[in-house]
Length: 510
Image: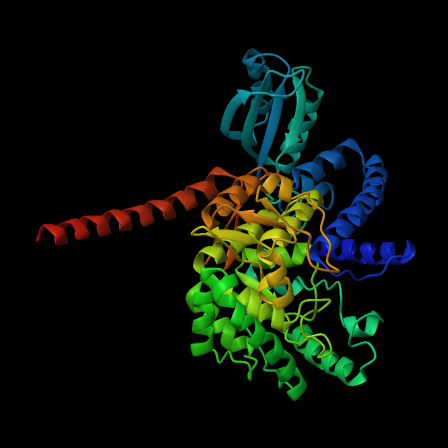
């Protein structure tokens, strides 16, 4: 599936060039839209190739491919091996369960076949009454004969092979271990100053060379390594200081209390000050202790799918370069001023960290349309969100918390303020060339979190996922065995809570 993702990215680049586009965008939402359009074209091309390929297969070859035998089938001798294989079939019955006896006789005719599990349910398909899940064990040859006979049976409406793969092939590839983020580096911009004549650093060769040098750190970085330090110039620190001083004055009255609380700690523990740009490794270690989030260096704006996937592992892809000094209050792309002053204080808050991770988890394996909606929700909450806190509307979005101009604009009477409703916010158009004309205000942080969870629950996906913080792995939940494992963990946690309550009660009595 990772190989398929590479092919898809290569297609996107060639498609962009052929259609007069540019392989660069300036926002997560624009990229999500671009990815949806190019992926639709890619799927059309690939489906035609697959149709032609399958048309050339014999009936036996098609069934063997559907069953996906362990070790495959190389030749006739391989097919006749006596090694038993486990196969799972979903059989859709045209009539009632009375026809099941005829189906079972097909299995019973083969000595090298045994049924391990069978269960039934009413079918929702038109022209069918019941569905039967059948797990059986047989040799490759016996399984092939059985499936051929089932496909020819007049009692069956459909025969579907459910192979051992936990993730269907139709689902876009996504990382399942934190080390897989080494593969999630599909940049929309590499060195923006080199590509865009409107970029404030385009005509500054010293700045451009410096950006290239800083970007190399991200290109070479791999999971588990210490994040290399950047030696910031006097110009970098001066630009940082201009933004820092103005924002620090506004934070007490304009920023979320969550942000203000953590920002104070960052000054004490990570060296945040107007005269010092903290190093990512120092900040990342601080975040791990506070919320479990960590930073990973990135050279520019990632694709929407890759960026959101990182959040699922509580990893924030963070740039290390500083915006051009000629425009300290605005950067055409993310920079460390935006991320260290805007994102980091919020992501170090445990509840906001969970909210961000939930968006990331919802994106794993999601269709392109849903990635676009999630990117839009991220834009209007994590980037430019407002929230009601104790009767006062305050900023929670990093795009506001890292721009003194937009922070004042967002909380003024100039823009339109709308209540946050996930379903309508997800399809709201936006613009990133100037201050936002519309901001969404959450009734409370809890309300925003609950609305987002309900929205994510309705994203069509043939499985559910959870993050295991011990192994730093994504568990794909799509069978009873996986659910039993999760249930066991939950029981252990409930037991600990019960024991704690008993001890607290005993302590009160004494």
